[in-house]
Length: 260
Image (cartoon, rainbow, N blue to C red):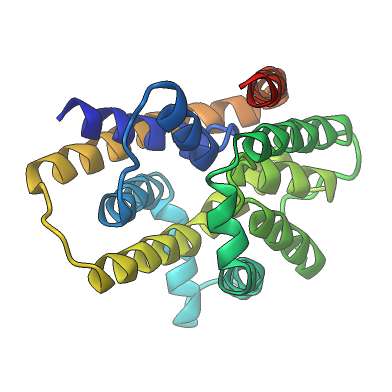
């Protein structure tokens, strides 16, 4: 049961902090000797963190849903369209490059390099923060953020770090970039969960339901706390601090992979 709780906590903490959940799961498997979560558990861990977003951003989601019924602002309806457009790149990349993506999960060197890429995203997003500050997303912004999210399918590249930093570099306020980033995570996490669930159904095996429930609950609770923390750090423009962490872990991972 400890394994399930630990995997859930790692997923919940690193899904929203800009440090890459997939990269840390790979490192945890190698360093701590944890067994891989397995496709069914991985699906449920994704949905545990998805539930955290749905709760934290419930008001934004209700506003967007009302706009589709003709009761909201045109800007909200545009946001729905932009979210759909921004979701296309990750679907294309995930389906077209599934083989290389799965292979990347066995490369410690690749994870180390990708963590350094995350650090670069965070530093660039912070360095350009004094440019034009817009609270609303434009189509080109959505496309750029969607492309950044597509890159994050590779372990070590943080989805939140890449998307929020790209939005900030495009001229969005940090709060606006974070809002769009986490709303964009909803279809991404749901789709990832569905993909893993499909894989689980192709190779049925016994499921430890109490363990899965514990892991999912940990992913939700820790994810909720981590998401609230990230939003506070975004308001204070402190996400760049995680660039130091990602650089240190990335470099240590690269060195360790070569020494091993």
